Image 1 (cartoon, helix red, strand yellow):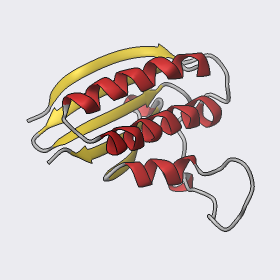
Image 2 (cartoon, rainbow, N blue to C red; image 1 turned 90 degrees about the vertical axis):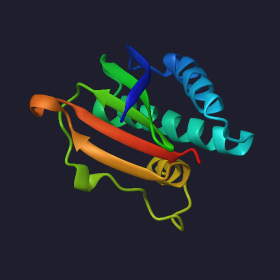
Image 3 (cartoon, rainbow, N blue to C red; image 1 turned 120 degrees about the horizontal axis):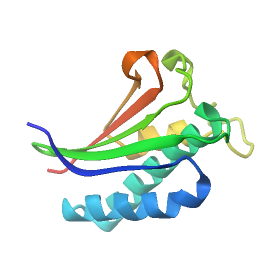
Length: 136
């Protein structure tokens, strides 16, 4: 059974990311995970937010709904945007041997999380990224 432990809507702008990292840190620390794991999860959530800001909204105004829920043995981080729906099959990291700045956010997200799902938003609007970590 899922229990929402955090729910907040915020503006899709980089100046909001410090607060998102704080919310994420608090949620993961309450689950009792070690410091390295906490930092990995923060990085994954931060990268997911940056991808929404840069790619979904293209740095235009918009909102992101951030929810953290607890399920038996896991925490679920869900980010919902209200931007045009993207083709989830196109969400990929660039090749790691392609040395240049940027383009590794998807890779970092998948490394930080135990499970990542890209879903279309409700009623054909927006996008959802659902990221799961095990807590046991």
